[in-house]
Length: 291
Image (cartoon, rainbow, N blue to C red; front, side):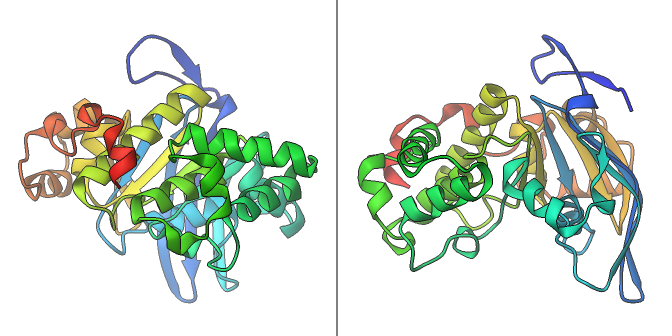
């Protein structure tokens, strides 16, 4: 399964042996096959974009990686992580994997945050359940991770409830929950769709920083190639359960080989390839206070 690739800045080689490898993955729910044998590598220190329209199978791919498919789902192929096939793990092992080794950020942060629990409880309960650290250490880790995701006034934020935050701040908190156990893999499923453009750019910039600083292997799931153009190192284009094109961001956006990829690019407001999308690099720290 050894495979190497260059990081987004071209500076070093990394291996998928420490990441995650999807091989010939099929998923059927009831009588309908949704994924038709896809293969994809998630590599430490890289953001891999999975692009496609609604119903293409993007989110199902992410749920399969977490073992969260519906009870009537049937799978084939492998998802190799840590020397094991995730698809063959018992529920107890999957529970340890989720959150601790593989984190996930959803489109709507309110779906992953409990409305009746403080942010401190949600961060520390999650951490202690997976690692067994003391209450005091868990609180320190919670403060650290809120600083890392740039939530203003972390001490105050810990005491608040989800409804007391804006959408952008809630998504940062959801990211904090996803990374507090220091996972190797982070799946971000349409993480900015519900946010306005300025806030969206700040969250994307945060994902880039976390990928670089923590060496995360990130899968960014989105229908928006504009988002991909500002963030992903590699892009895989999924159509009707099949990956029709995969390559570096530059190659896919500047020189698309498949008609479907070209149609997605042409649908962008300004389809100038790698230059499209939110200006991630242009967002300053003011955004974290205003979102």
